[in-house]
Image 1 (cartoon, rainbow, N blue to C red):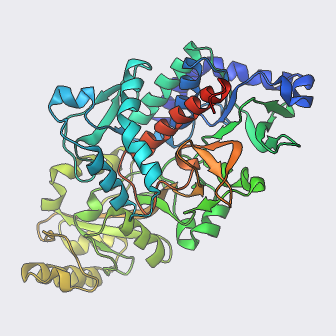
Image 2 (image 1 turned 90 degrees about the vertical axis):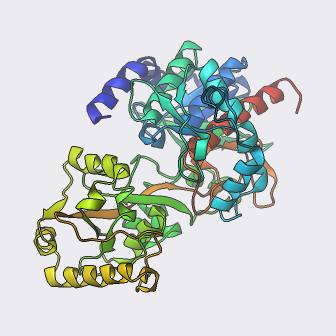
Image 3 (image 1 turned 90 degrees about the horizontal axis):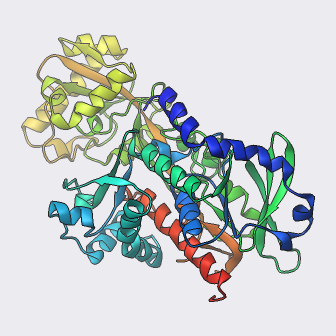
Length: 495
């Protein structure tokens, strides 16, 4: 989806929301002075998947939510996401004959990907409610999915791709949910930035927000609290440098540029237990244009600007991207491929991404010719490729320094040759305030902070090191529904 298309799409979908933003300056002074007069049951901060699901489900349950978005339109990572969500034995899978999964298998895979460091109860929450989320998104919100393909582990047949006119699927998901929220009468205020969480001076529970608009500062209160659906801190270089280090700070952003760490900054006065802030997801990218060599990085040899290998091409694209950022002085590397590798079907989208965004791919009828085009030393690169090919042919690729652990490492022999520049890019951060299974933020003594919720990548405790593709949107939706149901039970006096 082009920038122009995205703007046009959200200009239509969010027309009512943009108009509502102008109302912020008119928040009644009486409301600001007296939280008891709050007319909203819940304030939701951030119009991504989690925030939109929470708002729609809250309205469905008869609550009165207020959805705040700091940008003129939804602009978080959801609209950049491919649009995969995960489900188990859904009606969509049954229709395709792929309903053979189990909760136990999915749970075990989620825990394995997180190196067993995810909170088991939070993982169970996602696994046990993912199917309900998908069925609700389809039947109540009108989201359509394409499924049936068996992808690589750990997605397998769990992947449900959002389909529709908008691309990528995450943009279609946001559009559908935003339109559903509008149809339910949810008040959405855009261009409204939350700068502080407010609390009852006697009880200490979170009960409102201070917001900034072009009209100035004002306060809005809610009866049952505030949910942060703001994402992590991936576009906040100060926090990235502080928590991840200089390697992370060198990474260009692969998604939204406005994910600024509200989950950490706004909650800090309430002393939450913040976990896993050193953890993040990254991937390969050509930063200047956004081209994505996702699969190319495992189908060639990876060299630095000196023309020498420095990382194992058999690692995940996540670890390779981390190595590029940490092991090269300026976060640049080059994948060297030949024609045989170029023609692998799985790489088609990668080559199209470079072509579509006008990112450079350096070619040559000889390796030396391609090296010169890429600005690499032809002799050094030729020696690197020769040593690599010799090791592969003799079955000793795993003995190289560094090793190449691919089961079938490709040879670099057939002209023409291709050299693909790329960087390690920041996708999303995994850490934040630890939550319980009701998405309540826990303090440093593991007690829920009354009235404060975090969902999606704003929350900590669910992801560590890596994640199952599609699990981030899925978890955001699951916990978005959870918060709405928790507040409904509070309102009815059941909690």
